Length: 97
Image (tube, one colour):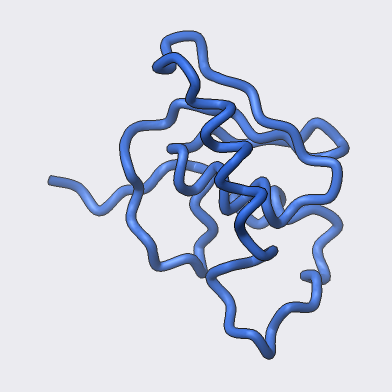
């Protein structure tokens, strides 16, 4: 077993993946990352103008499940309530690279 996580998992997010990458999440500038539904939703919830698309071999409904899950999350859910300010980076996706 590996400790590697999907590319959409933020380095500060301690949660494990819920499966293999099945979606691509893009920010408003079309920078993006592939991710499992769990981390895709967490990333999408943290973006303004973000979009989610299924990967070609994704199970039916992966993108819509990710979209719906993101709607129930606060931005940057891995941070404590005191740290809700947006990061200084121009795009959160930049921090994933």
